[in-house]
Length: 625
Image 1 (cartoon, rainbow, N blue to C red):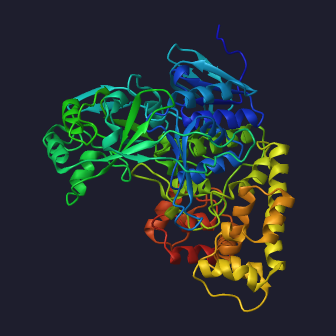
Image 2: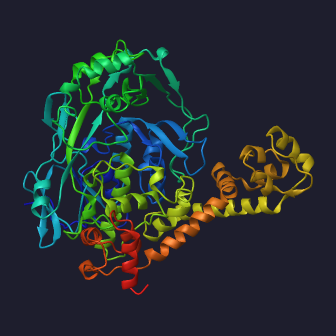
Image 3: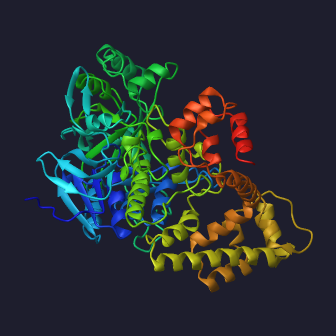
């Protein structure tokens, strides 16, 4: 007799970042959900660096939070340092990042999931799917237990036929110390899916007691740290731990080169593609031979542990080569290893086989999220998990799907890129991938997405009311600057100090605030502004919103206009299973790609690699546009 007599609405396979967000989203949207993972003690494990956020990734974490996901809250509760990156650039580039306490991060995720209604757990390897006709019906475990469900989400990370490489040694595993998962790839290929191999790597972990931090450069957090979550569930840090920075040297590079003939990436044993934007140390030395040093960020793994992560020294070289070279780095002369770095190869499935809901085109009710789709990074995985979990739940409840557009969220850009363009190397999000990045800022993620989340039942009424209050305050503050005048005698001392032209007569404050030399703190020095802020009890988030809306209004309006133009093409639907062979004027490549990807709108079709503007014109004419 099986333990599982009921049929679940959603089964999530895998307990990494994608699996955790998928399980939370499905359960919180009202579906009876089961999370099955090989080891319940490694839920939300930070397999690589102990950090969340960064360039574009920080925007994704704030979007996940605005949509009712848990990543932002967990990151805030377990952070040991906060930094807002790119503050010297425009607000479209500002990106929050935290150093995390690795052990507390996983623990907090586990506790939050255990306190989520509608969510059950089971520890075992899933090695097969139950498929009836063209739809999924559940999963089969390595013990032969069959668990029935209306939908399944695969979030297998690097575990599908995972193969770990350290120099000439190789062994099966999905992560250091954990076994690989087998059976699923082979079954999916039999069902008609295309699969491929990718690789990623990780640096050595070292004993902090063996390091000399006096020879390194301290990297402290922000003086006035913020937080990820828009909710009141978390508070900014009041104390922080510093990271450190050191550099490689020509001596280090020469020692590493001695082992290149034993590196699986250089001797041909690893054939699969690795992440271009997070290369191994041997790859950096090879590709950037003109550079005599590379930065290494020495990151603590938590508040109390002595373990450190050597960011920038990702490698699969033999362990003795890693050790010998790292001992030549300043501050590492007496280093002791906790474990060497390694590379890992794993199976993935080209994401052009998915719909924008992350449901597969071949098997109804089956969803993929995370590294199985060819992405890299905790944040990218978590966002896909949320999208897949919510959509699986909505489908079971026979409700409309949840799809984010490119002008609504970085998550929308991520999913659209994967579905329409595919990827042949681990996909990582960058601000440059988003054509509307002035609209998709980290500061306004709640204004963009909380209303969408509230509509589908993920965001609470309290979150929605808090957003409405904040939005009203920001609008009123902008109006205050637009309608309130300031006299030259009050403004000119500040203008002179900032090296900008003095006023000759009274003018509206917005004219002063719009000047590039004038910052928010300058405006807060004026009496009327100070009084308005105090009377209305305005928080920093509201003040920053007003500043951005005033200073970047021209850019914001321009991007909105461009997004509106694109929306017209987004509204032109392509019929299901459209026969592109009927359109003889389409290029051969366009017919082939469009038939394979089956975009649902003209706008999506225009972003498919190999589809030209003239191909889109042919389709518009055919559809009477």
